[in-house]
Length: 319
Image 1 (tube, helix red, strand yellow):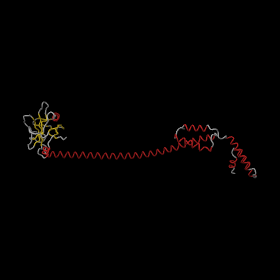
Image 2 (cartoon, one colour):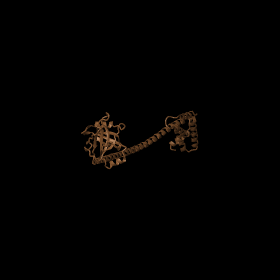
Image 3 (tube, one colour):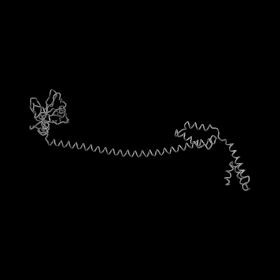
Image 4 (spheres, helix red, strand yellow):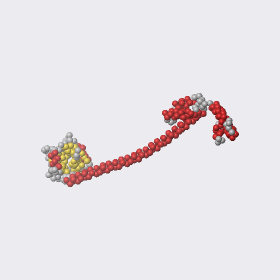
């Protein structure tokens, strides 16, 4: 909806009009109560060339919007046949105060007063004011140029704002790229630490299992030949629950090993082993020469003294 300036506050021969009174005129207008027509040269009869749809006050100016304007009349106005406008006001319409009666377009008629502040008083039986707007083409051209410049400035500001937004987005993208790179480095470092920690836990757990198996071998529950098999079983069971406290199945398996009957009686085995070694040693050196017998005696004495096998004694004597 386009508004046209038709009047403004000021001092006129017919009286003074303040901004407050301009606002009151706009507020009083009600097309359902009394609709103001568009006329030509303040004709008081004849056809209307449109109607005032709404009125508003903007600062000290009174502006109106038109409706139902014939195209032929619009063309006449655009062709410059009616360059000036004038308003007619009721002094006090049915107690409402000043009220817009009509907006009249002037053709060849020369207004009594020039410019917006100029007023042409029309004496009539209807007791109305008549105000003329003498805005010339140069002023209108300047207004159009100003409007164009304001639009260009607004477009420039909008484009500049878009450039600033793009620049800001690029900076954010760069910052996010750096953060992603840093995060990747931290993630890689974390994986290396977790792998190292995992290796340490595996080594600790293997040592724990080794100690357990060695203890069972010492007590005769297991024989050394089965150590690797038992170790593999324990490690496989441990993989099920990963690292932490022993699971119930591992505990049960350990208890099972501990409950086995002794596989070796170390006293008997050792004695039989020594007796066999001694017998073999004696048989080995039975038909030896004197030098060999001397070595035999030294080795036998060393074995008994240090409680080691005859073979180990020979090795100590470098035989």
